[in-house]
Length: 173
Image (tube, rainbow, N blue to C red; front, side, top):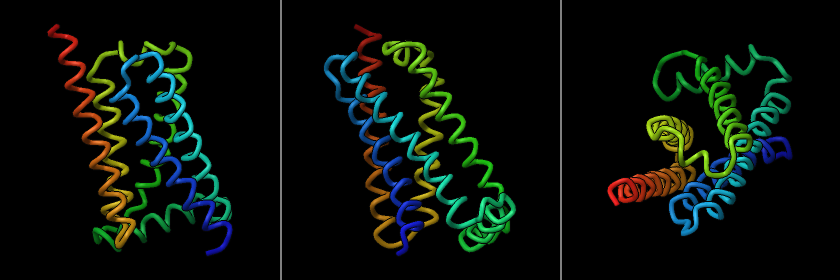
């Protein structure tokens, strides 16, 4: 594995692991401000690593060509679901943009603002992100990567179940 491939692969795993750590911290923090501070830092790290992954992929694999990235995405999609469609590339752009906006909002709105925003927004956003992680690691990969992705997705799912239970217990108390 060359340095470009290593950088591209490692940055996506840093993004996934940082997001997962942030979810676990967010779910298990006893004091919200401390937990939220660490969760926000983990999600910021994850988002930054995702951007680094996209830049690495464009630099090392696609010579900064959107057409090349689209074609490669279409090829990978066709291999897995038999549909020659490169639109997943735009989904990746959307994930990076939305995650960046989400992180920026959390930094500018303040630490406690994330827990105070409408629950359906938080749930919808994180469900989408977990769906993307599931597809990227379980559906489109195989072998050890698939098993690791499944473990990550299970951890994320359980974290958000815990967060939802805690939120409900606070609202009924």
